[in-house]
Length: 259
Image (cartoon, rainbow, N blue to C red; front, top):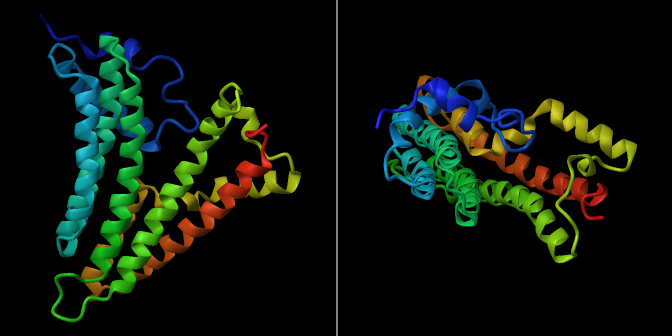
């Protein structure tokens, strides 16, 4: 059976709206990964590989981001970025193969969300352990490991606050939330939400953005010597995660999503 061309795949696996989803599509997917994934799809859609198997593999690469970051120096930071990029690639490919093969399952949707949680947590925990200098000749400073774990918990909580809206509405017998309901009822809260959205500082605790930040800080620390900037980065991400989890909770409660 001949492999489908990219032109044949595109209208099926990239239906209208896929790249424009406000909360369901990462900028990396829109910018470059969806084009790479199309080239991978054509080699997979004719095989017995299932979308769920690709999702499990995606989760595996997300987990590997943590131990990758424990490799000292720039090499570990590069490996961390590579694991996260492979996660992002498979996050595109699994859904695209599912659309082509028409193989959809709730288990796949569930594991896709689990992998998103795991990716953010693995990168931030790995960053904290990296900053603790596990393989250094001196004493391990567990403060940085704690701050990395705190950042990971905050990042997970932000995602949970969003996902639990759907749980609460389902248990209350309400239909899924509409996009307009996410707007805060208070004009002051709406302005604060737009300001936060413009600054995008909350994205720093997402696995993809965090891995790129870690690579940048690792390069700076390699040139400068020591772990000053990586440790500063851990502290900043912990603060952002805690603050954002609180602000996001307030935003949810101030919107119409729970009504």
